[in-house]
Image 1 (cartoon, rainbow, N blue to C red):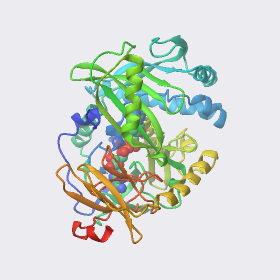
Image 2 (cartoon, rainbow, N blue to C red):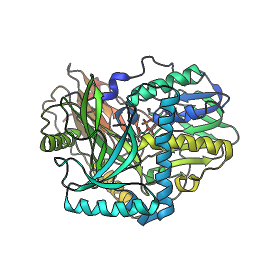
Image 3 (cartoon, rainbow, N blue to C red):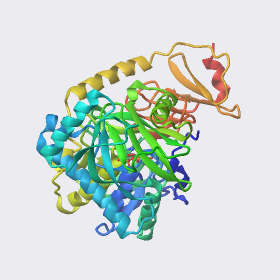
Image 4 (cartoon, rainbow, N blue to C red):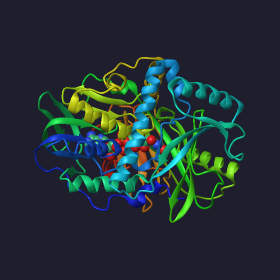
Length: 501
Ligand SMILES: Cc1cc2nc3c(=O)[nH]c(=O)nc-3n(C[C@H](O)[C@H](O)[C@H](O)COP(=O)(O)OP(=O)(O)OC[C@H]3O[C@@H](n4cnc5c(N)ncnc54)[C@H](O)[C@@H]3O)c2cc1C
């Protein structure tokens, strides 16, 4: 089984240079995932000039590992939103995401993008009697906020109960879509810089972003779309953003015998289904099994859980791809989109539903810049306080995790197998040693530069992951996600003996 995302086959075919000098631009966008690229697209006609700065390569963050369902049916959510925030806010959330679906459909059609875009139905289904009751409650919530639906049976192999059907959802091939968006942007003069990390953002009338190589970008507006906002001042993002791991598998062959649609059930961890077109064939994609990063599970166990679901329900024996990624959710379930300061904006934390929401978020940012107004401005205000039970529970867990991850017993390394890692602690320093398949050793200091949590080795991705706030690093120490802004410190192999007993 290939442990990369299925979309890996369609990466952008060229690379962009890093930023080597100070520059000026009208709009600077930080991060080239679906959020940043969608913002750039929406501003093409109004901005005088646009620059995008990406710390790795275009659309290779969480966006590359999505399952790319474009939908407002985000599981069992509207009942919760109604209960916690009231009907008007729940309706706004629905309308916002519906607008995102419509916008992607419009862009695909007007730009003639060949990306396997397909309009499908969405089904919220129940696997158990308890879930059947959730379906009833969700139907009541749909009634209240005006979502058109009907209850109808889906395939009996999948579930014995009626599912909640909604029309006009969609799915696509995310990399084919974004490849074309990047082509459009560059053809219209947008400057893209890869391998360029922003480490600070500040300013008022004139805003400034500083790169790790100490280059300065002067901009009239900055839009921060780098997953975990690099803007640090007084916004306490770490208290309201929860990192989640989610998993995805693709069946090797065969049709599951269910209608071509988007499916998701009502309990957490959820199971979601769609078909993808791959190598000219229709293959089933099973995803979900989400959990908070602080629970840290080795991805293969969760991937096996999804495979077992496919085998039990549809008799699928073999799987071609199995991957995972991390996405951020907020403690009140609304994304963080809007102004954080004059001329500095944020669009992130889509609660694991960043396709429609990023497209709608980009339109919202465009409106905020042009008219300083949006019907969603108060609801998604990124500076809002989101203090609730989830906030308290999560932050207590983080404090516990932070203390726990610091306790690593001193260990003696007897033998390290190729393609595996061990974590050691000596004289107060935690180190991770990874041996690659060619037996080469890589040693890094595995104290997270963000808040000094101890990192865990992720066997599937070969990364060191932080359970507290989601920073992730390659085994070579390169930062790939999360609030940290520095790579891990590399330790020369010649110093290894200092860490062994
Ligand atoms: C397994 C899985 C399945 C999913 N399925 C769905 C689905 O079916 N439908 C759906 O709607 N959503 C889904 N999602 C969620 C969706 O994929 C995400 O919400 C979305 O891709 C997030 O996009 P983004 O642009 O915010 O983040 P990213 O794609 O991570 O982009 C952020 C970019 O910023 C860059 N960056 C970070 N820090 C810096 C810095 N300091 N300087 C410069 N650049 C920086 C990163 O390298 C990255 O490229 C899924 C997620 C997962 C993990």
